[in-house]
Image (cartoon, rainbow, N blue to C red):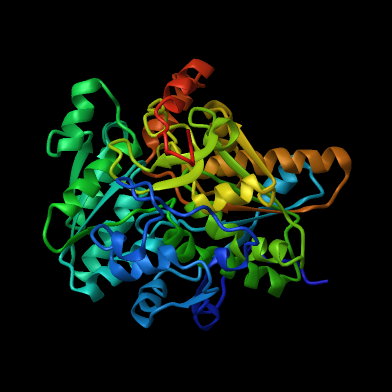
Length: 460
C-alpha cells in the first residue's frame, strides 16, 4: 500500500469551479431574516442599501445548490489555491494514537487565513456593481487584512472598524491593512453615532464585533457608492467558504479516505461552515454519517451556553435580525486572544443544523488549554497556528487520545484556519505565565439575554 503523503495539493484544474449552498439540501430551512423596523421577513431588495446586489441575492437564495465561481475570482484564487490537505504524522506519533489526523491548511496567503476566499468574492461583486468603497469590521484582524488585499486588487477603498482590544493587541495587523491601502479605526470610536452611543454608555469598553459591525454599517449607508461587507455569519460567506470543504473532500477521495470526525473552530461560522459543507451534504442526503464538532472559546460560548432566538447581528441594533444561537447583542466578551471567535452569535445555517441535531456537538475550551495544544502542534508540525485554529487542534488532540484509549482507528479532519504570526502578544502572554482564563458567569450571560428583542407573535 502506498503511504499517504504528508500533504496533498490539488492541481489548479482540479480546483472547484462552483460554490456549494448547504441550504439547498437542508430539510428544514433557517428562519428568515427580519426587518429591524417592522419585524417582518426581509425582502432581497431591502438588503440592497447595505449589501452588494449579487451578494444580497446569494444571501437570500435557499434553493440554488451550486453557484458558478466567476472567472475573475478563480483567477485570484489560483494565486493561493488549492490549499494543502495535510496528514499530521508527527502529532499522531507523539500521541501514540491509532487515529489518522488530517488538517486543511488555509494560511498560505498574506492574510494568513481562510478569510480571503470570501473577501475576493465580495470585492469582485462590489467592483462589478460599480461601487467605489466598502466598509467592514474585524476582530482578530484576519478578515480586515483579507478584505484589504482584495480591495487593493480590485481598486476599491476600504474602511475597517477593528475591535479595540485587538487593535491594541495586534498593531501589525493594523499596519498590514494600511499597507494595502485600508483606513483602520479602533471600535467603538467617536467617528460614528453608533460608536459615540456605545462609548457614552460604556466608556471603558474593549469593544466587540457587534460594536464594530454597527459602526461599519452606519458608515456604509451614509457614504455614496459604498456598501457593507461581513467576513462571517452570513449565508453568502458560508457559500464562498465552501471551497474549503469541496477541495478537502476531493483530496480525501484521491487518498481513498473519508472523515469519521470533522472539527472546526466556531466564532461566527465561516470556517466551520465552509469545511463541513460537502460532508454535511452527505449527512443530509443519507450518504454518510460523519460526526461534526464545533469548538468555541469558553469566554464567548454562543453555541454551548447561548439561546436559540432572534437577535440583532450588531450591538447598535441596525442590522436585520437573525434566528441563531446568541449571547445577546449586548454581550461584550472578555478581551481574550481568540479575537476572531469573540462574536455574540452564530451563523443561522449552523445554528439551525445544531438545533436540528445535524451538527452533532459543540464544545467550549478554556484559553490556556487551547494554547497548550497550539504550542504542542507548532513543535510537532512546524506551523504556528492562529489562536482561533488552536481551538480545533485542542479538540482533535482530545479525540485522538480517545481513539488511543478505545483502540479505534478513526479518521479525524480539522480546519487549520490560519497562522498565528500576528498573535505573538498572545503567545508571549501564555509563555510568560500571564494568560488567564475568563469564563462568564450565568449572571454575566443573563445581561446579554436581557437584550434580546421582544417580537410580537414571534418572541415575547
